[in-house]
Image (cartoon, rainbow, N blue to C red):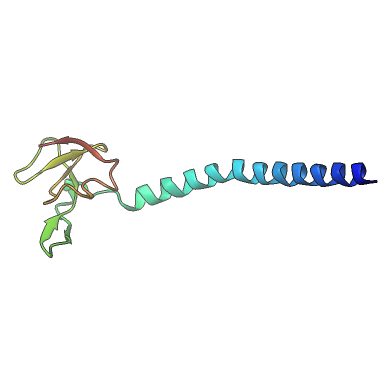
Length: 105
């Protein structure tokens, strides 16, 4: 009887792991969709609208938000991987919602 009990225990553990593996395999697709929505929410303003957006940085300074331009503007400190230009005054967090820094200016 001990052999059957051990077999049932192992079978149960195997079944639970299989179910958890299936659930885990489905999770990245859900995260992927969330990432896309999150990325779109932080898309920088296009200059064609004529309005420039600003944020207050960790030092309390008003800084222009990353913006798409055809060439770097005065004060730009980095080009982000989504091709927007950042005006960040510190390296930490620069282009964090824009794919990271493509190149420092």
